[in-house]
Length: 279
Image (cartoon, rainbow, N blue to C red; front, side, top):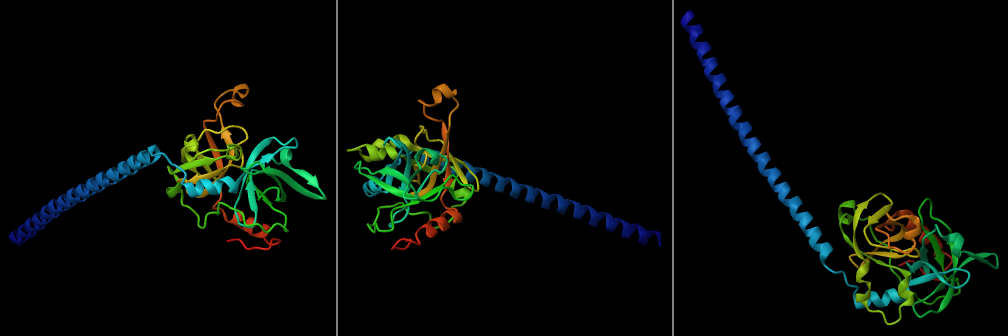
């Protein structure tokens, strides 16, 4: 009886030892796999960062087609004395446009019981726009449009057709096209190289980017990879004291994201009185 118990105990001990050895070996394999996966993830992350750095360093030139479109799709908003105050741009062919809402008290005028805006084209030709929405919700966006009798097709920058993910936008190169294009006869695409930058952080409604801006760039169009409209410049940030910030460029800026559904809805509503449809 004692011999049987001893044999059984020995067998149990041997099985237990074998199980421990197998478990240790399995854990070593798992740890080895985890280490390799961690190394691969590190390599992928490093490659992503390197690609972002390369992408940021590549000059983003406007194509001739885009540059030509910007000459008529963008415009300068004028104050009461006719001086350029901020920026705006058309987002539909039937004349619906966007600008920054925060400076509306400076450019908004009343005419025949309507709120209007004076603007100027690239060719320095003045025209007026009607204010449809002084502000879209809590966003720094005002919606404007041409008179309903004006059926002239407009060059425009189409709104995004889908929502861009934060992963797609973070670190992506952008170009800011401000209203000075409306005052630079004979300019070439290379003149706008200084507007290149990249998106540093994103939120549900804003894009923070590193392009230097000046006062008066509010309402400027932010182009993703110099091709797609993605934002409207709202505010610049400057680390300098106030007395110097007016004449020095900001170190970064915020743009309202234009892939938001409330902006698309506001533009669609602004089009209902016009003899055309939003593309």
